[in-house]
Length: 151
Image 1 (cartoon, helix red, strand yellow):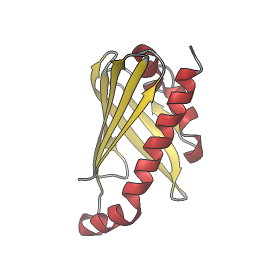
Image 2: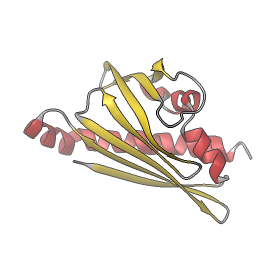
Image 3: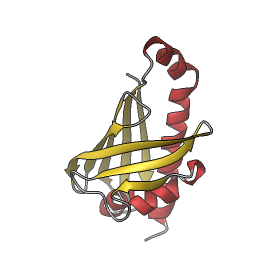
Image 4: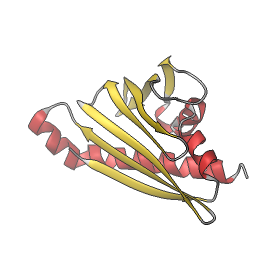
């Protein structure tokens, strides 16, 4: 199971970073390259424990849908969402926020399992892991920009 971990320091309070990361409209804004939008479940506002959201986006030129559920919420330091339906066999995305002097360290940990056995191992190494890392890093940088411009 590939694990992608990315840390991003943000010059903003932990609560602002935490709330931006679980805001549905902000998620849509920070994933505009894939035309991501909420089409089911919670479609606006802040995600809470037990909420589900279905995202529709274009990845690899194909329109896809993925439903995720928030399974852990420790405000304002951590939340976890898992895939309940979608292209992966499974994924767990842990969002952690550590208050630091002058800001917040945001840590994304994304663990996923591709759906096609041995073929998936090859796909992960050739392109999928790199693609997912770039997606997570891009979103983190967009969240950083938004959070730092709010103060």
